[in-house]
Length: 125
Image 1 (cartoon, one colour):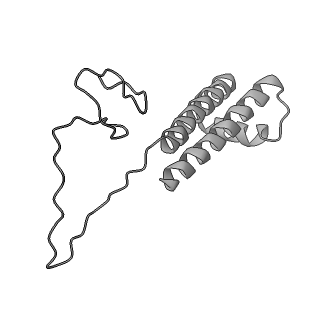
Image 2 (cartoon, rainbow, N blue to C red; image 1 turned 60 degrees about the vertical axis):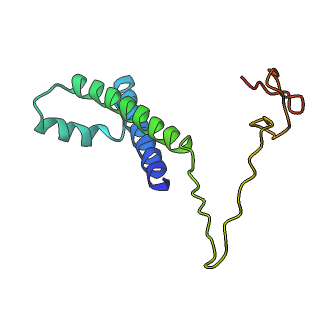
């Protein structure tokens, strides 16, 4: 779970930096990254303007993916497994079976006609 959160955070940062680099190059052509990016563009068969636009769009998409991974990781419920162990030679305790209906939230006694629990005031149906 922490690995997914770290991955989402790293994608968020990389996407943001890529997006900002593309925007700053489009806005003013004199940035520190321009010579390096022009060298990369010389190996490709696309124009500079198309490459800069792709930087912006790619950065934005990576930011969204990183954000979604981070949020989905934080909202995943934790599952707790509880196991009941019985010591050898001991008998399991029988559960009481009652004919009187009880509230599924607080366990208070209710009647068949009750719509709300008289103790916790939660809806029964």
